[in-house]
Image 1 (cartoon, helix red, strand yellow):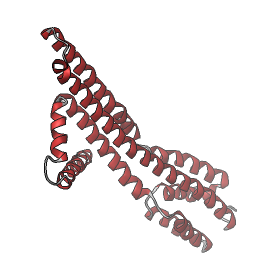
Image 2 (spheres, helix red, strand yellow; image 1 turned 180 degrees about the vertical axis):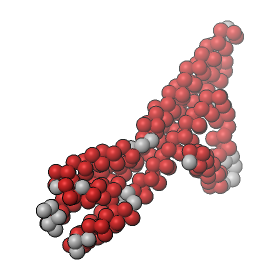
Image 3 (cartoon, one colour; image 1 turned 90 degrees about the vertical axis):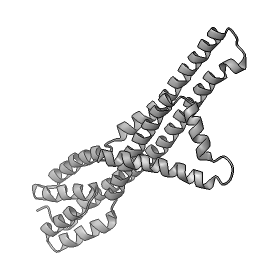
Image 4 (tube, one colour; image 1 turned 30 degrees about the horizontal axis):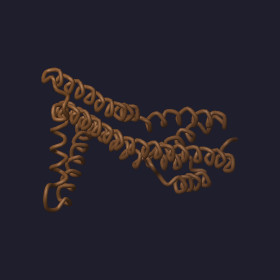
Length: 238
């Protein structure tokens, strides 16, 4: 699975660069410029930044796919469950939850399983299992946060080393002219730029994922409240 995600990250990056190349038109393409700047920025550090970007994109794509699959129409789900409960078909309601993907249906299923033990047991199971589902939803976010932090730090590391190289050149030549130090300063600036760009891209994905998780959690909480009211209304608790 992880190999597939890394492949997706590489594929997206390559597709983006090719699209830029095709839209560039005549003259020097944006892709060619980007490739040249990548090499000029010292490929050793730039490659590390690129690897971080690809891994971050891989984790982000995995989370987005998972969260989209976990998103369901809560109102439609609760309507189906309510219809089964109105018929007194507890097993049918549980079967609907089992066949519906996502954390909301899983939480409702746990509540149905514990309905025979009373409202306190249902509420406790919903809260406990909801916490477990939250953990599944947030899985991988810590790695995306790590890549967001590492990307600019690798860029700054390249900046520091580039400045050291510039001062080494000054010491060897004994001259502080712009021509002498330009190479080291260019490496310093390019690595910083690429590191910051990578962090910005991953931060946008991260914020989208967090927003998606918040929406699912709100749906879970609304469904839980509706579910408890539904059980009471249908006389499930004897």
